[in-house]
Length: 454
Image (cartoon, rainbow, N blue to C red; front, side):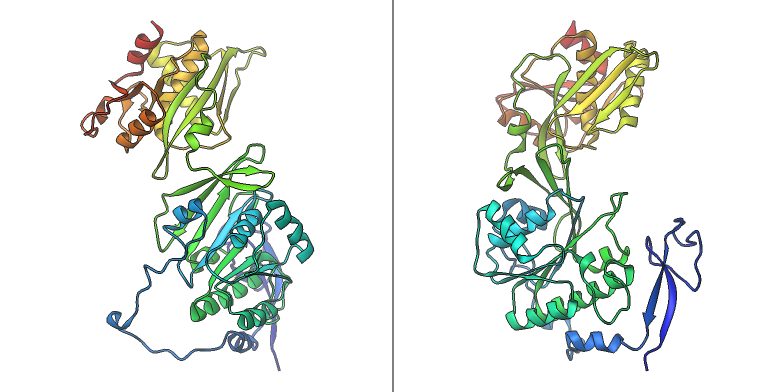
């Protein structure tokens, strides 16, 4: 007879207690314990679902490597983020905010895939609703089969019968197994379903993509062990009010985590953006004050962005500081540097900053572009449209060296800019002198101000 036991599980970290407590002693979260029922004798039933395989320890010389057998997804941006394609038998977790386009990305990939047969399981939509989304995307694929339901046993039964190359679960929070007496979305259900799918995926060399929800703090919902279990964790992010989306790799056992993919959200689906700089600099040919172009790095990808600033007299006494796409605390630090080291009086003025395109940037090399945009708006003098900036600003007003300076210069040259201001500390790192762009080495912010605004 099965033995049941009632436990209280922290929904934040997965810690268990025999009775309810207000604060978790493991992660410090308040009011995160939920009552769950554990069944101790049904664990073998889950093992029988997957099917235990006889295995023995092997030498490395006996193992056949399949590093070169990556599957082409048909999506250049997705291939870039995954490190060249999908590794057979891997498990990928895709997370993102509600409405950001996770299901659209995966459905679009499934309908255009070049991997073979696909089984798409949705626990959130009916098959007719998926059909409506597919018609909006304007794509069909007879190798892609759809199933609506939330039973893990049913999913595995159909998967064994169809033997797909790719299994997609949308989403893991809606899946449930009969071996766990808990509601779908609970920690125990997510942990058990993922564990079963992981073993099934590895034993049958089936690539599995799990779509995961995120919490209000931006973390993937479910136990933290979920991210440790899977092979790759992808984050789909962006502002719903803007058209651009960024696919970022947070963990990748088979490739680099420094690559990103950029998409444009359209009515007909997601469009790959091969050269985002050209789209983000649509108005750089106009003489406008408060606008500076900065060469930034997203992973190993160079992107030229427009930095827009507005400086005006504070109307209500207390100056406002607002930044979109940039760290507000770093903006306050840069304004203090301008006040103390350069001599611009900004303490009584409102400062608003915006990164065009809705992209959030954390590259320190954006500092110089932010400073020049603020100064341009403050004196209402436009920066020459053929100018690019790249450099980190220190607390003493010095311009510090940044990484990958050659890539930044070559990207600016490719897009037709004629001069770029870079830190003097990067002079030795720039081994190749470009032919069509003038590289200006500067060491302090005041030097650029005297050259551009004098």
